[in-house]
View 1 (spheres, rainbow, N blue to C red):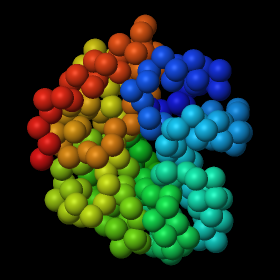
View 2 (spheres, helix red, strand yellow; view 1 turned 60 degrees about the horizontal axis):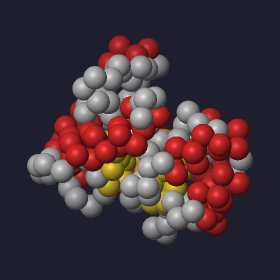
View 3 (spheres, rainbow, N blue to C red; view 1 turned 135 degrees about the vertical axis):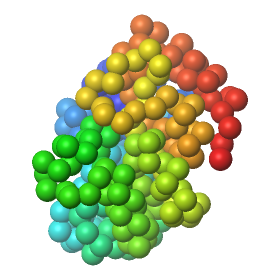
View 4 (spheres, rainbow, N blue to C red; view 1 turned 30 degrees about the horizontal axis):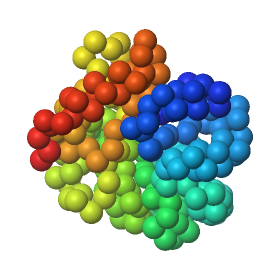
Length: 224
């Protein structure tokens, strides 16, 4: 579950009410509010942490960030695949498997026109596949991409790497600032290994019931 809209009091109030959750994503918003002590507390309570800071910098700076994440016991850490091969290799070499380094392909908030506004000439799908290939070449453990690209990524990179998918919305949810979304079941059936779900749970009248509904919808999902 993504904790991006929470402060620490909200985080633990919600998590204590949903015992089925054991893996959480911490983004820059909540981390900037609460600091590294939040990670320490999550670990002390047995949660695995995906630290989603989307590092994009020179290779040595990213290497140092990975080193710090490793020392903190982080489970997964995100970097932008568009940072280039040398940066990805530096991250992978420093991690040596832990944390799992995930390459961000194209943010789920972007569509083709927006991608072209920032200088990319190819479509979202083509760009995602190019960056997934670069992440694989750089030795990363997985990629982050919208569920819309999962099938083609899997066909391209095989089963060697994880595919983590944000942009998950329930059928009754609004998209908010996301452009490329799917339901949890659709994403799993496309081949996603992990789903990042935040607002559909956090903004639900009853977060525990929302999680139960999501899990129920996945029980009969047909994985590829």
